[in-house]
Length: 82
Image 1 (tube, helix red, strand yellow):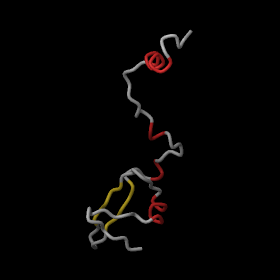
Image 2 (image 1 turned 45 degrees about the vertical axis):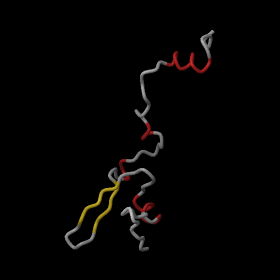
Image 3 (image 1 turned 30 degrees about the vertical axis):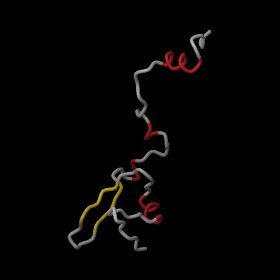
């Protein structure tokens, strides 16, 4: 397993390593240089802190500002609640 660096200095993390770290698309990694010349790679959020519920990472991501009434009127018309 020897992935190559692309022209954009990117590398694909092999599936076995992704599975071992418990990471997926969009997750952040931290790189730590070791004294012997190796580099340690770890997820920013350790596997033990990740929730089993895939919707947990979406909590709080909705935008506010438009009331439910306004959305219902826009999508269903003024008489949506009669």
